[in-house]
Image (cartoon, helix red, strand yellow):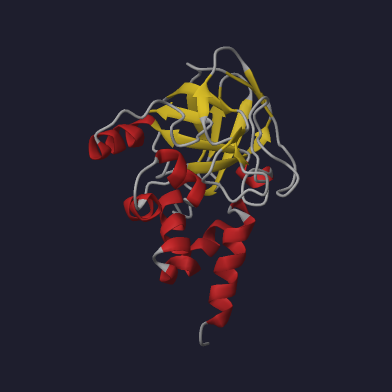
Length: 222
């Protein structure tokens, strides 16, 4: 398991975002050299965990529990075959493109060590949005991405560090609850009846997903 690329984006004006200033950092490209990764701070004020990376709409992106976004190269390859077009590393706006890592099959709370010092913890799957669809330029992209159910993973920073392309990825902790990123994604999108199962992941889960699950359970007949 290894890191194929570290991808950073710059703020750019586009016609397909609902950001008040019409800008997005979703167009991320691989970079050479080491990149520092740290916890960016709370959502709404904190942006990307990667130094030099732009996250523009902090209402929906970035912050402590979405500090880093990872996508498996294997999933990009699968989409390449389906879409009939190349998808370079960074095409989904991911910070990390991995090889040999089952990103969507990772457990909530699973911890990865990348390179000599960085430790990340899986929090949730990525929910597709209008900006993502506009960036890809594919019709019905939000629906198609949701139906595929391989969203990639958001991660929080447990121990800061520097990473670069080629660094090994090691899973250093796997919780025993069985709640995967893919299951969490399905629960909050198309299969709400799965929401009670998310509670097993407890505070490792993205706070918004945890609140959604708790609210759903509270509304069920006793």
